[in-house]
Length: 144
Image (cartoon, rainbow, N blue to C red):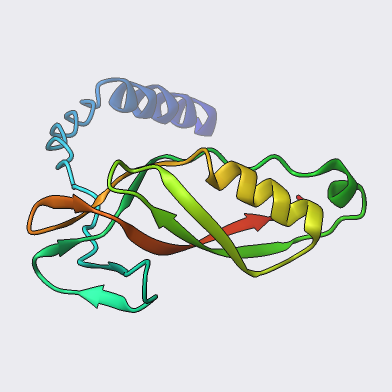
């Protein structure tokens, strides 16, 4: 008798599970808002090195910035670090001058400077007109 009750329960339980309604689909997500990149209202004056700030100033923004290739000798030696550079950008968005502020090693510094010279920027503006500017750039070299 116990076997019959168990079989009947198993059949009824399976039927209940089979007739269970699927959950309704989740509502569609709202489209992601397009968030513009942050605007810097400051940049370095290339002549004095003083940081200029103000609502009528917009700092330079990199638009093309390839990473420097890792020098093979530094990679073999597992040398890592960050090169800090002060970069002067002309009113057309091209790199005019690069000064290494904090060095890692000559070959790494040279790779960083060569890469930064290929970067292109949306130039800084003062009252909407493009101007020369400066900024500090850090380029990291890490062995993974």
